[in-house]
Length: 283
Image (cartoon, rainbow, N blue to C red; front, side, top):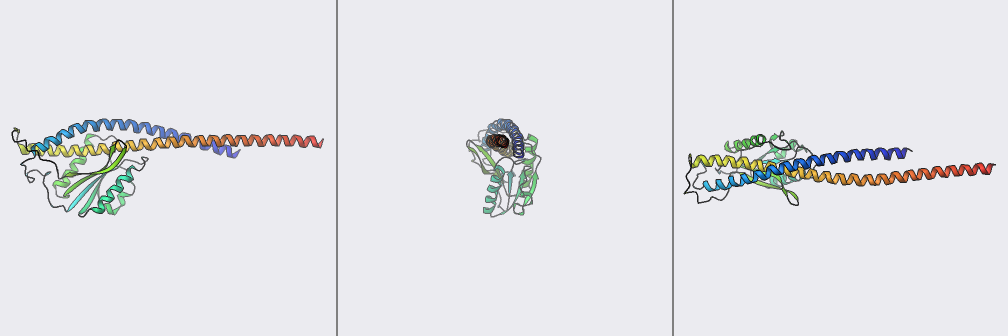
């Protein structure tokens, strides 16, 4: 009887876990749709901002625009985007492993900025040279949170604390997601040579400074949204696998329960028949 009670208790626990994973999958799916919608809208605007910047940066000296200025690479800042929690498969570990591979090849002095609340021990890891943590970013980031991060990154570059800034995040693809890096600053790109006939108001330099800041803001926002889309997709996939495993385990537990009941009933019948035969023989 104790075996049956134990199996029933385990079945109840697995069913409860299955309900939690199904709920988490629904939540991740809803968040995935919201972040995907915001990312698609942002991509169109960011692309036009990039093309506009390339149109007007010709003949602009890097000394006149702080975000275009290049200098000798002495310190590099890596901005790492991780999730706010676990239960998303290898999402966080993959991007962290990718960052470590970049740091091993880095010849200049470096430090990192962490975006996300997930703590896999990296905050105490001295090899990352962690500078600051942005752990108040929501699962669906707001424009204010993205701008706060972008402005901090721009200050690092303009003030000379970093000579190059690289974003490291997971990018969503058709077959899943993969880690990638993007050099954010200094701004690089093709300089279109067809802006000479344009009329600039108030002036070309002011426009370049404004567009360069907008480009950085949009690039940070897109990296943040890309990372969140990948995180929600990874968690949705992990919860789907957990649901399948729970269903398979429930099937096995129900089979074990039925066999245990059958064995118990068979044993009781055998005991009854044996007792009846013993009484008959005694008479």
